[in-house]
Image (cartoon, rainbow, N blue to C red; front, side, top):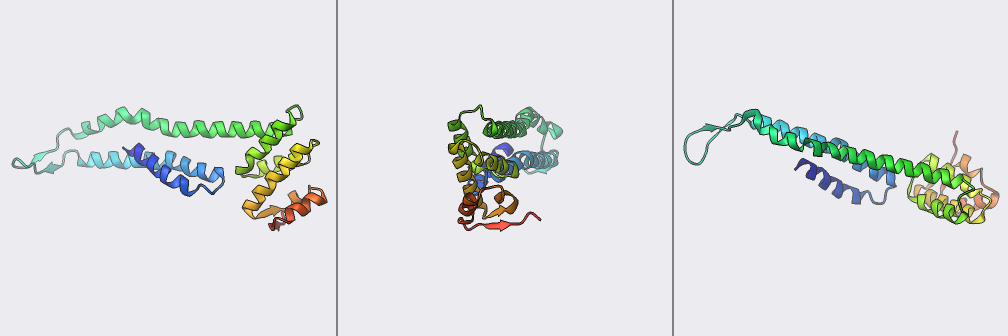
Length: 193
């Protein structure tokens, strides 16, 4: 039940964060899985332990005790391996995303990869955020293949339009024509110093 509550909370929260970049949404889901679900499980078990041995009034007569004592917790021990899978799932997904991101960024700089595939990869990382992604795209925008260079600059413009700010150190790495294109977005140029 606590696992289901954690997943419902994640299902309600993540669509609200749909406009945010991937890492913010994924971080919220990771927090729910690694913190919220175990916390709910701990609170539920604590309440069950407190209830064990308490008196109650059955409808048939006088007071009697809730039977079982600590044995009431035993069925929950059977569910514990399943509860441990939830954080493991998030860690597996996080690891897969990091490996995928590393592979994509390495492939962007590899001239042995066909230009069409590198251009597709440059467009695919538009939803991601971070200095490593932006620097890889800056390098891609200076690629010898025009298709890759255009895709890299196009993706950078998408990221900077969404963020509303661009680092001046990154902007100075472009030729004057590309700098004018970025400035035409109306984004604020932030000095790195």
